[in-house]
Length: 456
Ligand SMILES: Cc1cc2nc3c(=O)[nH]c(=O)nc-3n(C[C@H](O)[C@H](O)[C@H](O)COP(=O)(O)OP(=O)(O)OC[C@H]3O[C@@H](n4cnc5c(N)ncnc54)[C@H](O)[C@@H]3O)c2cc1C
Image (cartoon, rainbow, N blue to C red; front, side):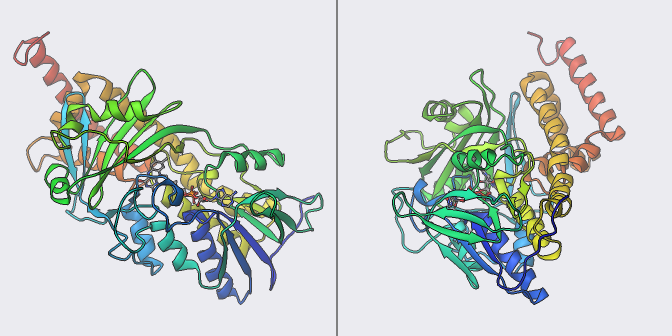
């Protein structure tokens, strides 16, 4: 028999983590509660100081804010200040085995932005605070208490009618906090995910891939000339397990990201920086120095299992995120669904299963199955010089050619995450597009066999 548990006036909520998921939850929950005339006490815990430079003040990411998230933020009245926006992105340059091509915004807009999650890279100068996470947290701070201390333990009472106890603070100076509800927004913190798993209500953390990031300081005009307002993506696959890499332009920095299986380290970044397509976007005499900001975060590639219990819900990366895409937007969505559930339904495991988990499963987890298929197909194309050539030919056709427009839209949506993977997949299997791809494939094969392009 499951329990009916609800928040009432004066209920205390502990949110663990002040990254995007924690901040969005605090914002939505206080807004929805106000609307219902419910007075809640929300306390957000985090140990990170987002005014610090480098990894210590940063939630380690490429810092691309998707077009759709920008729209959601605008609808919530959240407008990023000029100082937080690093660059407005107009396109993606995709590198394949047969060459590269620029995918620009279908309507020439520049609503995708890049940011720093912390207050800029280590060793960077300048005043003020440019951190996106600090900006979000500041935005939600009214009516919410923020405690800059780590949470160490979560203790669920055997009787779900009783409150949850959390222990926070540095070793030797711990304090206890009684909460009616605990919202876990601690990202991919291994220790915390393990602790939650040990609570044995069925939570299994998401699986992850390794990543390495490097911030390269460059002259603003140089970045504009070599990269422009475009993100470079290479589906660079190596035997050591590297899966994808990219360069993301900021104001006077370029963020380099490499993602792969196992440990991804400095040597993988060095190899990536040696690729001709990357090299030509760096000054010819550029040399890597020791004084560069770098980090090795993890990225989630699967969803967690059972991210909820009585009086406890897990949101953001520790719950689930879109496959290879827009983790901050997934944090937004999971936070919104969790807030709606706790205010409008209740805080029992049953409420979270139907009000929260079912929604995120539909929107993110099931859709990721299509995402995985799309990336599998794209990787097969990328692995083959022949199919890369077919793709390149298709996207470079003369203006007005329907197949070109369709193919470009598919790739644009795959890399921006503007629409669901299921819709992208449906567009890819469109019979007209498939017929055009077959015709292009046959033509290139014929030309090769006939020796017009050159047979090896
Ligand atoms: C290489 C890489 C590139 C990425 N690029 C992008 C991108 O361009 N765009 C995008 O949208 N997403 C990107 N992501 C994903 C994105 O970073 C995450 O999806 C997003 O940050 C998840 O938000 P979150 O709030 O769940 O977790 P986080 O952002 O990790 O925040 C968790 C917070 O919890 C705090 N915390 C952890 N443990 C405790 C504790 N015990 N007590 C108190 N506080 C605690 C942490 O200090 C942190 O502030 C990228 C990820 C990686 C690895």
